[in-house]
Length: 369
Image (cartoon, rainbow, N blue to C red; front, top):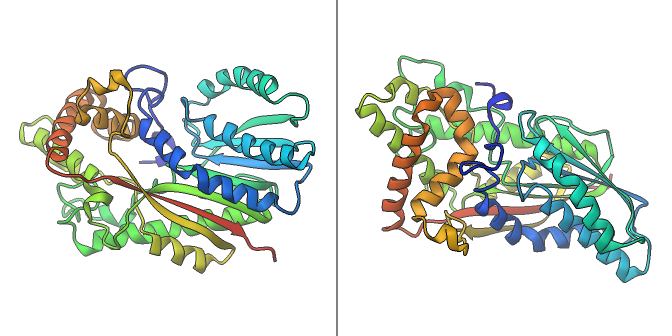
């Protein structure tokens, strides 16, 4: 399975779209904003360049896609107003994999430009927004062209599932599971850890070449507090999805070998793993590294959403994110039934447990060699 070709959030704006089911991701952006503001002000404290390069990696689509950009522009513009100077020219690049719904973002740009002009007036520098399709596990931008890199809810996606997990189709290493679980052998845990180390190291190296000396990044992704990758906060949403699939196997609706041959290209690291990889790669100093708890359903206050069960809300959120991969592997005809069962399992689990997602937010600054 080529991840770059099959991993994308559900497009459009219907009931299963990412645009309608991204409350959790919005909450993650909110809790990480103070870290982002501190990091941006840190690179502007001594000098405001005439032109600032900004990249949002894994931008996706829907209401969150341009929200982060507006917040970044507001932080910089407010700083310029405090100093009584003209704001810089903004070069903004939105990145995601090629099958992302970039068209929906482009349709929002005229409204965004009009809003910027109305709210910020003549002293606000020109803003040029473009798209950069491609994997962030490799170079995307010219050398020393960026001042600030942001990524939210993206870096827990690996470049691929660990290849070693499926080298022997007759004896699957992680039978009946689609990610790390409490019953997974240590070889599965090690395979995922090694894939994360390889990918994150490449990500850091690539960004170090694209950022100016002293430039910064703020990265936010699903993680865990515990060093144990089998903890519920790290993997139980995948455990329940595997159980939903296996219930369909028991009824002959899904072939068991299909479940055994699917491995999620995902990894939720702990803070110690992040620190180790940053130190090993050597191009960045860590500013802040914090962990935040996020409700599985985003803790939405929306009255319409409140009419749904928590399990159904969680199922719709997860479906909007992973359906493209599951549909490619299992076929689209089982998706409605799969996520119905998944929602029921989530409802039962959350009625007895208080598990939350753990979101790690890290700021880091490129060393000035």
